[in-house]
Image 1 (cartoon, rainbow, N blue to C red):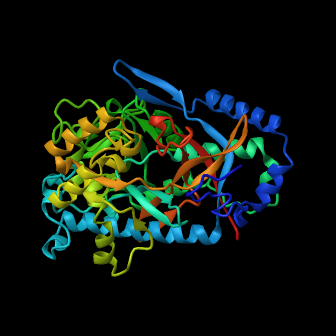
Image 2 (cartoon, rainbow, N blue to C red):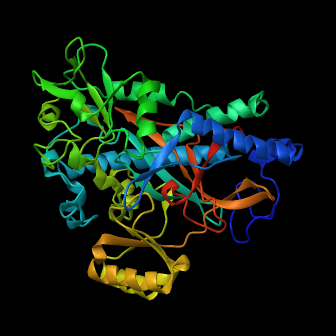
Image 3 (cartoon, rainbow, N blue to C red):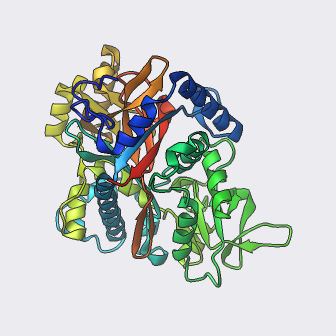
Length: 475
């Protein structure tokens, strides 16, 4: 495979020589027959389809169920590389939790002039109902996914934070399970750090964040919007793997000041609710009155310490892309440390000077909605048509505060298997952090998302991206 010029390749670096973490795998791959590997790719697809590992893509009329493409060539990180990522994610997550507590309490960071107060006060993710409210254990973001890229210089950088309801961990787990089934010889005698303990670690972490009202072992439940949600497979998968109840709003009620699940044997109180429902839909008595996805009265129970909601309501401020641009300042303010992982350079279009630059260089930049996710509502300037650039220019001029812009980052590449052999495709990495009182645990590796289209920089599954197994190996 010829590495793509100007891009750091995870397997071949910049010089075209196999990097140390990949050497054992590279030797194994060189002895493999291409026909066998292509057959294994087809086998993996059958496994995923049989298991029901799908997601929904929403079009104009209805949801379409799809498989996420899976590539059998793993993304491999050395122990020293992983140590940098792990420490950087832990530092970042601790700072964001401290920031959220400050936002809803003393607001010291605004008084110090480090962040404009309007960025929060005018933010749709800010929930006044959470002012003065401290979640059990002081944890706001129990599960965090941090999207990390490697630049053309081989340096890890954070692209964005996911502090509301980050998804994708089920693919991390199923990718590893599939690779171990299809290629057991790759794992025999090789020290690849395991990820299969994530569900138990998640359960332990959530139990440690149980509310004061919990008496005895905490009862956990996963709140899903239902089978039509794009990530429903993951909701059901995690509930099953954790030994938690999988519930919808219609299964829950308020009984004697506690949230309870309806069962044939009577109400079963719930202590910790891992919700995969957005803030706006959690409680129709507090937020959207038309919501049928939430539980009427749950916020009253939450306010008096009767239940832990993970992640905490109002935590979406921390993954707002305008706030993202201030995370280096947030880290320094709350930890007194320099960021271990840098941000990608970012222009805030709310600032006239930055807006002017973005409008002038629109065809060179990536522009994102500050509240957007999943690759929707964004412009990749170099790949955009003149019409798309013209329409996006109007959006920026009309609502500049709704957007940030970043350079077209030279995402690192990693080989994928094609019928013609190995070919470089761009990737990012989403490590998952579990937060409990006094502890941040990061699963080794995380989810590697890969742009399956040649030269594409968009890795989101909703935009055609695929996934890979991610290995952390000893140096």
